[in-house]
Amino acid sequence: MQKFTVHKGLAAPLDRENVDTDAIIPKQFLKSIKRTGFGPNLFDEWRYLDQPGQPGVPESERKPNPDFVLNQPRYKNASILVTRQNFGCGSSREHAPWALDQYGFRAIIAPSYADIFFNNSFKNGLLPIVQPETVVDLLINEINAFPGYELTVDLERQVIIRPSGEELAFDVIPFRKYCLLNGFDDIGLTLRHADKIKAFEAARLANKPWLAHTMAVEQVHE
Image 1 (cartoon, helix red, strand yellow):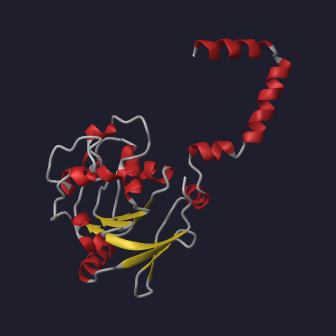
Image 2 (tube, rainbow, N blue to C red; image 1 turned 60 degrees about the vertical axis):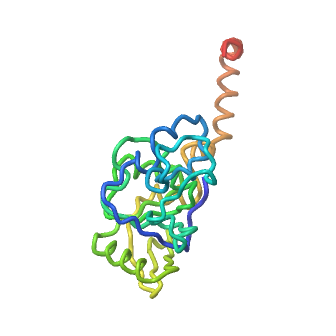
Image 3 (cartoon, rainbow, N blue to C red; image 1 turned 135 degrees about the horizontal axis):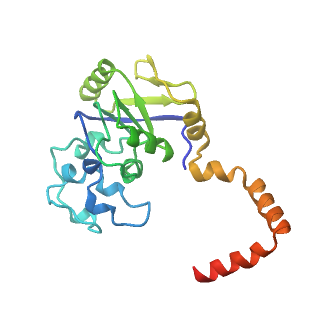
């Protein structure tokens, strides 16, 4: 998982409440058994006019919706999404943070999130930041008013830095912060103890050598 320390990037506004996970990545794109390739279909029903979109169709063959905010040239390569309350509601699909991350977003700023989406985001290197509605109003207004509007997110110091230099503090659970700063997903956390795991397995086989035969039989059946 990519580490998150300090990120400065172009901010884009998604001025909608209750954006659900089916809007973030529609259900027909969930057939893949891979964890990659979802970025082109982020917000598919809003980004494209040819609906319903289908997996495997190149972006060059799609019809972009010129009215959707992320299709506007001024928001090309945006990496910070500022949106409204209850973002990521609906089904619990982990593909939603995958799609946002693979599109290029590193952080989201909103007044509130659906719990499962919020937790899944941290596990996939995406930083969801909670800010009051008044702050979100301010940021969206400034983004709309000033093309090229960039924000800096400093996770170590837990602040968002506006172009004016003003710092907006945010909270994050220490364990989640530790994982993001070090780029640890659940597997990465486990692999920190790889030597202990190998030592345990070796000791177990030494004390119970018949397990080696059992394990070999299981692998053959697999």
